[in-house]
Length: 504
Length: 136
Image 1 (cartoon, each protein chain N blue to C red):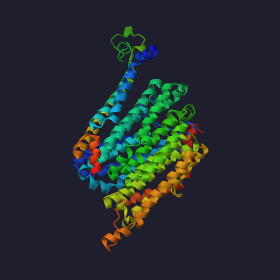
Image 2: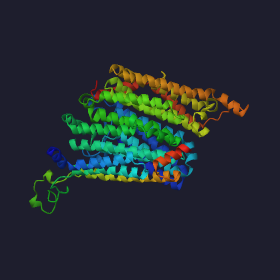
Image 3: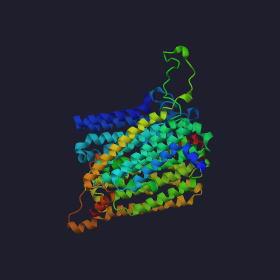
Image 4: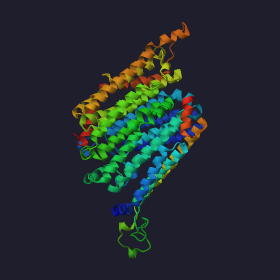
């Protein structure tokens, strides 16, 4: 049974997506339970995989779980590889997707009453795609799963009633498709020169070909594709609108996971497929990419300052956070890479946390402008506890996990002597502090204004339903728990990953 | 000069795919009509399909079905050595079947979204839509 985990991880959500679309016609009440069961199995399988990979001895078999689809051996068949790096990402993806599914149940039932079957089908297919991208060891298979994720994402974003959603989604279609095509083109060049699509196989063939222009082209084209997909600064134009105008149940799924999984793909390409020796020694791109990341961080923060509403502000913060992770990975030292990998998990959790909180606010207040937040601390105290925890983590206040990954990133920047990156991180933390304290001020003291308009009626408490608040508070608690266990995560998961690729 | 010409002629498949790709990219970025942009995306995808198909092709080679090979059944007495150079590489072509499916799905989703946009704004011209959003 446990040897089938990598297969179950994909098959069970895929089949449950099909079941949901049938259930949508027969009995709409069945859709949600099937979705929960499908994602729970995926979560169980990914936790099982993480435990198995952790128990494996890295010195013996590389600590890798290999799964042959259809029994075909790797260079010919499609193989799923699970090592510590993607086991961590798998757990993050399945935990966030399941918690978000449960948290948004009421919201989805009310805003998609007639389209519940379609909504949950797309939701589960999207998560299947994300899990597949993470688990696969085949470069072309990754492209197909990338497109599954993207196509379902386009549909989900446009499903809400938001006025600008269809246009935002269509712009995302253009950019997303071009990004995926660039990745496919890069894979084509890799296939031309190595004759293989299997990532491990490519990695074993490439070292003799590092001087080849084809390998260089493949690497650069793949990177551009992946950067487009993750919204790395100059290529980010599609991201803020798509994430802002999506329905809140979709924003809190896509915003935390999509960009983070793409960062994982970038790190996988850098570490496993092309190996750090090629990425950092043969190529002379390192410093320029870190400078691009610096620009991404600074511009993301500045644009967040000028954002007209809460959701758009958070999406620009995501643009800045993408800069953190790309920059950290390209610093080319251990601390930077550690910070980058750790930040995948942390940023997914804290983005989920703030977007869930905003989702709760939208559910009650029916708006996400800054004015809608007036007196929100009195109205929705528990939601705002979650929001503040997420905000503190994004700013980087010590007990929360955001502090620790930022710490690793900053020490990586100092180690590499890249003070521009360090300065950008500090600048962005300051801007985040300004942004979130502005929100907290409006939410906490803003009720004074409401007094003028409504005479003496005090703002009464109107908290979101328990089923929406509890998952949010679990995520908020998780932010602190992950922060406290950072040492363990780094020592047991991330250090072996970096050690395997012999990078220093 | 003659070197450039000969390199163009020798690698004409790459020049064609890059030209197509740039046409597609120009349509996506430069055109204001949403349907023209969708067509641009499709040309872009087709260019990459052409690229893959061309790297699998070989001059004077045939489809990779071993007709007279060992275990072929009919001509067991004439079983000869199989030379890989006589056969095309089928893998890029098979990959492109999947990519074509993806391209069709993308086109479908994009057109559906375009219909939704049209119903909302009554136009498919990007600048008119943006001015309508600003007025709102």
